[in-house]
Amino acid sequence: MFETGIERRILNRGYMYSRFYFENIYNDFIAKTRNYKGDWNKEPSTYRIVENGIGFQNSRDKLIILFFYYSKSNGRGLDFILFSETIGGGLRIV
Image (cartoon, rainbow, N blue to C red; front, side, top):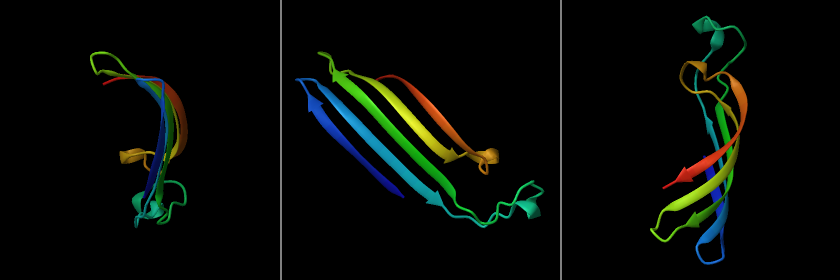
């Protein structure tokens, strides 16, 4: 697992940030013995996530964050052998 980030203050109450997360989860899963189609033989589940955002702390100490993210990762649960790309964003209020 590897996780890193950088944050830079802007103005008095604002900041910009960038974060990166990477993880390989090794397993003993063999698809053919579990009635799955495909050739998934002990390959690690991989998670890559990048998030960039701009945040602002208002006068009531609430954080308002506008963020964008990109993920190229395996699924979780029953669809863990599927590899997908996701691009998204949102507004986070903490």
